[in-house]
Length: 95
Image (cartoon, rainbow, N blue to C red; front, side):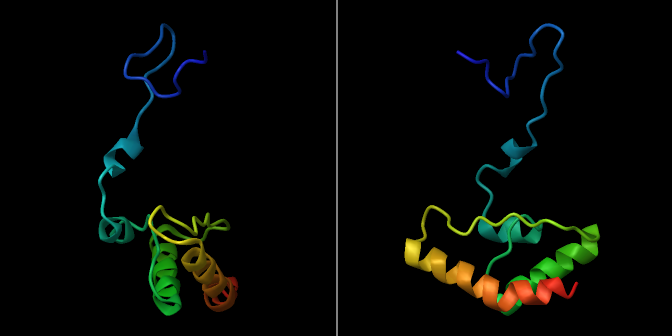
């Protein structure tokens, strides 16, 4: 069995691993949006959120999308991804 990636007890000669993601447990969608960890809403709102984040952190080339969370249906996720591709992505290319 492979050792756990994150452990509270460091193995001999191995530094303890920081667990910054542990602070995200229980975070609300609104809190995640305020921290720039999640962009959500109508296409214009998502575009504004991404622009504001870019202004705060500087230019970046990659944005990882998670188009479906546990409470969305497949149809809702597909609609959101299509809206992003049609109405947000072309505007981001201008940046």
